[in-house]
Every structure is written in structure tokens, then in C-alpha cells.
Image (cartoon, rainbow, N blue to C red):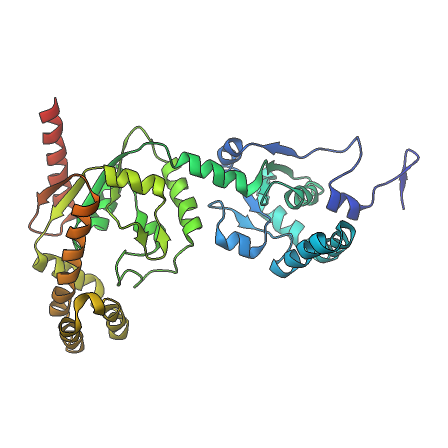
Length: 372
């Protein structure tokens, strides 16, 4: 063992686990959640929690370099609670020791030429501070999130309470609401695409062509990031949705504001909407479409379900869609009248994002002039 100034050097293993080097040691800087998020625009974020913790929900853009995998974390936690700290520490050192070099290389690669990293664990405790020490031995500068991921989630819950100026786009199924939002975004408007964040189109057919859905927790994290990039004083366009988009649940803080806002309802004929739906869904596997129709069999009724499936088998997609729209149209209008205090019907003869954007802007301008 090396000696320095008459004292035994602290073994690397002890430094790694305890984060202690003595009075001359460098102290990793802990920063608040607001500082952390501001710096994350230019500095990479490392989440050192276990893979399952990360998959349940993480700060958008964070890269997972777990100090322990799920099994290791369970073993260490159980030993800490049921045996003693020393036994848990020895197991932790054994688990981590085999991965030090690979974790260090990963951190160095992610830090890049800037040589800075933001780190967090669940509570801003030993996992993030230990990993910070490891990366700092390579000359990297590390900042640890005070309070960890838990502090981030608390910050998120408060931020979602902020009042928003929402323009809520409504319309029956097949009205092209998502296409309209995308067009408005291209034109420079502030847009929140809830279905895009949820990887789901919001109906029994909503998962077709989409990647797997995030957890509700991750959906909230991604929504918070999207909102944080917008000007809260400006108008924000959003689509009218049910509280659940597939398995993702819209946060109550946002959903309540959607319900309180006037819905700009695109009133488009059913036949036009059916043609629009066919252009998007006819290319999917017929078995997938059949499965989706069967999901709403109880709502459609036996006769209409059989008719829809028969049309599908004959590749008469238009007729099959017209049948399913009987249910969706009735369901949407019921929800609209039950949940929203006010809505404005804006007639349109076709699904056209450009023309419908003009119609909506004309209505808003007229409403503004009436108030002036």
C-alpha cells in the first residue's frame, strides 16, 4: 500500500464506494434540478440507476450506465436491510469491480471533447456520487443532481400545474386532426402532439404502425420536456383526447386545462373522413385490422361487427370503415358534450390541413374581433 505524507493512501475501493478521500479531496458539485435541466441542453446526462428503474421513466435524453443491474441492486438492498451494511458493501464492491473499466470507457465516450457529465440516481446518493468519482479519475468534470430523479419528478409535477393558453382541436375520428397539428407546427405554431408522445392514435386501431408505447411515467417526462421548450405565454395547439391514449394517461394537471378550454370542432362529413381513413389503414395486414374491429365488438354489436368483418374480407375497406364510424362518431359526441363546457363547430367539407387551418384561424379572428 502506498503512503503519502506519512499517511496510508486510501484504497481505491474505499474511495469508490464511500466517496471519501480525505480533506484534500475534490468534492463533486451537487446542483439543483433547475440548474441540472438548464445544463442538460449542452452537457450529457447519465442515469446510473438500474435498467428497470430507467425503463419505467427517465429524464428525456439521459443515457443509462447502471452501477448495478436489477439482480445486483436487489441483492445489495436485501443485504442492507436484512443483514448489515458491511455485507451489503462487500457485495456492492464485488458487483461493481468487474465493470469499472467498461463503465469508465462509456462515460468518457459520452462526455466527448467537452469532458463534462451530469449524473443522477434515485435520491442523489451514493450511486451517483460513486460514479462521479469514477469518471473524475479520468479527468472528467461531473455534476450530481441534488435529490436525484425523485427531485426531477417533484419538479415536473409542479411545472405541469402552470396555466397554459390552449387551442384544443376537436373532431370526429378521421378528421385529420394530427395532420392539422403537424401543419401548424410547420408554420411556426406551438404544438403539443400527445398522440406522437404516446405512440398511439387513440382508438382501437391506434397502435397500428406505431412503436411500443412508453410507460405513463415516461409519457409525462416527455410531455414535460416538450412543454418546457415552448413559450407558456403564447398559444399552444393540442388535440382533444380522452384521458387515456392507449395505456398512457394524460396528467390531470394538463387534462383539466384541456377540458376547461373551448374545443375547435372540425365538422367533416362521415364519407370524407372514411375515405381519409382508408388511405391510412388499408395497407395494414387484414388480420391486424380484424383484431382491431373485434376489440370494439361489444360497442358495435354483433350484426355490425359481422358486416364490418365481411366487408374487410372482401377488401371493401370504405364500407368497413363506415360501419366502425357509427360507433366512434356517437362515442366522440357523447364525450364532447359530457366533458367540455364549450365547443365551436367549424364546418368543413374535406380533410385538408391547410384549408382547415385557415377556417380555424378565421373563426379565432372573428371571435377576437367580437370581443374587441
